[in-house]
Image 1 (cartoon, helix red, strand yellow):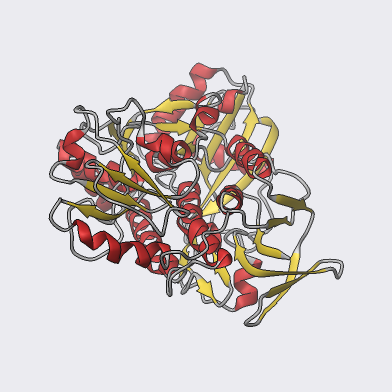
Image 2: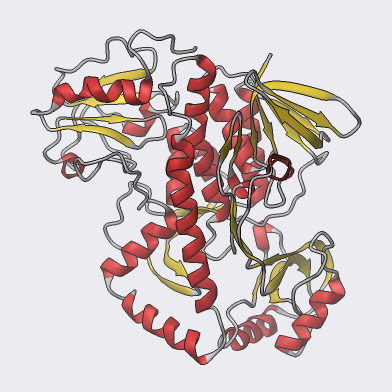
Length: 491
């Protein structure tokens, strides 16, 4: 029997499939399209996503096909130098075309045994206490114990569930596409500089994704389309380029054309019985700050081990519900910061004055670090109650005294107890939690100052931190996240 059906083979669905397979869960991914779109809407991995790829042993694959970038801020058209002291061992982002990200994640999911079926459109859904059943276009039916909708902002799964998607509709739209141009680069660059002095939603980038002579063009649309399902035409781009730059630069030979708006919506709940939502199916927002793809991948890593625990029978009561409890507030915060960024991108005197003020504030290192941490998600902290400052936060990669790195020990997707004293034990949970006795290299020792041990969840967040005096509390925390001692731990 299928354990989990994942609907949607974008980055969120593929990352989730890989996470589930780490725990032996039988997963089938259903994708409506017969092949990858080739569209590169999401072009970057921010710090937290870079860390997650390292945690799962995938970072070298991404580094081999990506360029690093170290622009701080990236907030509402404001770009600042990379801040000093950002809490990470990976102080950079990766410029990775979305098709490449999807290819790498699909390769990983298939390597781990996930089944990916393309050309499979879900048109019906029902569930009961035993499982979930879907109807596919053409009449075929498929059942599973759980289902996760990772099928985008117009999610069929969410609509079939009847989950509310409140928020604000689009008030402005932007055209986005890759195409060639006959104008020379100097002319294009000069025009872009002039237009962007007043219109930050305009941009033309050459040689996009390594394609010589191909430009990524971003230009405000002429209003909001009534039919969002119908894509823009090349003539739409030409008309809007002439409106803003006085020339269409001789654009031709489009690779793909699309549009996006500033609609901001979030699912009222991320779980309805045995069906869950992740990625754009759970939240949509403007692409300002480049957070969308990253938010979805991070949803997947939060959800994967929890859903696997349910399937494998060791999940403590309420574990799966913590997915909504933790990720819904994170999604809401991203929606808020993109609302703020859209305001900053306005051309009126008020937004321009506010942008100038915020730009000056971000010259303060602490402000720049805060904003960069917000955009890159290294500032996320889940509410695990009172405790040391690291509690609820993800732990950065650490160099250990034995010559290893912390993230090298997290490739299996299990929990991890880093024990600096060798006096602790995970007996009863050894099939779900790895016990590593090692100390931290002196260069990274300040990160764990005053702490004798830390317990990491599979997603890398600190579930417990001991100071040598409260270490017996570990036996209270282990069941909260990893179930009863001696429970079957799956694979």
